[in-house]
Image (tube, rainbow, N blue to C red):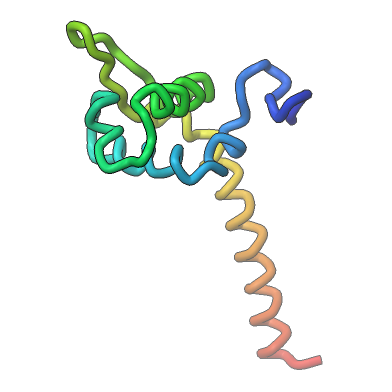
Length: 112
């Protein structure tokens, strides 16, 4: 359940809203390949490192990524447990559609 400003009631930013942005989805795809620094994540993007850091901050606030210090730089990685709510929602939707398709199959086999 979400509260004001697209934030879940617990105060954490909504992961679904975070995923709505194509830049944040790209950052998650890059992090799926392993840990990356902000500099590495910025490569090939038409935006500043500061802008990428803002996207990463939101992803961190949603619990989808985490950062660790590595000397003077920050290294980001995915937090698999942060995707649990998303997986649960997708599984519920999948069960819904599987049931609907099964009902359609039965109807087509049995006829009206």
